View 1 (cartoon, helix red, strand yellow):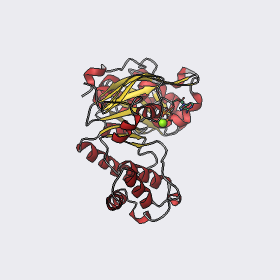
View 2 (tube, helix red, strand yellow):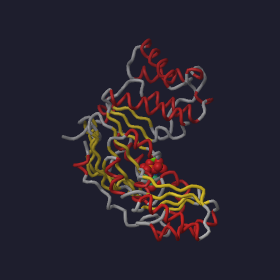
View 3 (tube, helix red, strand yellow):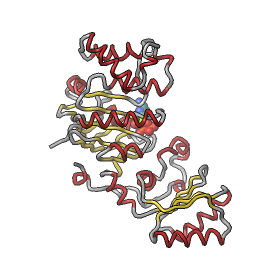
View 4 (cartoon, rainbow, N blue to C red):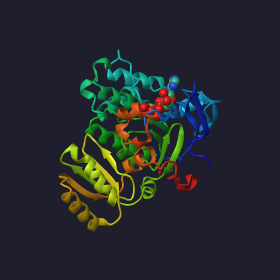
Length: 347
Ligand SMILES: Nc1ncnc2c1ncn2[C@@H]1O[C@H](COP(=O)(O)OP(=O)(O)OP(=O)(O)O)[C@@H](O)[C@H]1O
Ligand SMILES: [Mg+2]
């Protein structure tokens, strides 16, 4: 049975760019799907197609069993959307924005007021409730937009990078709100650049790149495919990165990822603590001074890097290099090979 959000063979092109190139998505009712991918992968385009804002060129999409192309108005009644860029009315106060949304959803004036007050408190906006939204900071706008998406609790929610621009406290608070929603039975599709967020919230994860799904599964399944433990080390001086990378090449079971600005190297290994001691000795022999070294399990960030060749938070900076030398990619061989069998892995 198709899930509460279901897309098959979704294609959307903008001129020559195939933003979506045959995407299949299924989100079982009451679960959270995390849609991950580098900048320009097609995440927002997917969200817009699924929420009636864009008409797909090809493919079928249903939300709560309703065909999105044939019955967009009916779909709009059962979904909530918080887009990548906050959509609030600048000239209304925070409170007025929320009350207006309540009225649009046919709440009585009184019910809309009560709901607005609850959300303003929940999203720590009560102090600013009576100021126009144009005086809000970026994070406050973001929170107001999220609150607006929650005025009525629709059975299916879409959130495109909901916590981008939120400070850690507000991010954690939003995670709590999302978890409560899901406990209440809401189905959620969320995109994020914070892989920890997907790890924390999503039952299933779909990684997209250049309009195609390149991997899917639970966070644990994806991590298991990415392989065993990693040695992670921080060199004292940037000049030592090259020598350290050479040392690590001798011990690694895959490519070494180097992040210049944090002076950090990561390499998949097998051999545990004994190997770590050998690495330290070898670095010492080569005169490479280190600030930190450790052994750790793969994270979702490692999965992302091995699949797409980029760290999620580095995308903005690396975008210029897109299509350039493949050397910029950390692991070439991982691409596309890590797909967990789709149907099996979904709940
Ligand atoms: N309206 C549009 N007109 C032309 N090209 C578009 C349009 N919308 C998206 N694109 C292109 O489609 C591709 C996918 O864009 P999309 O916004 O879906 O990516 P994304 O995964 O959401 O990226 P980000 O992480 O930066 O938000 C990009 O190459 C983008 O330039
Ligand atoms: Mg986007």
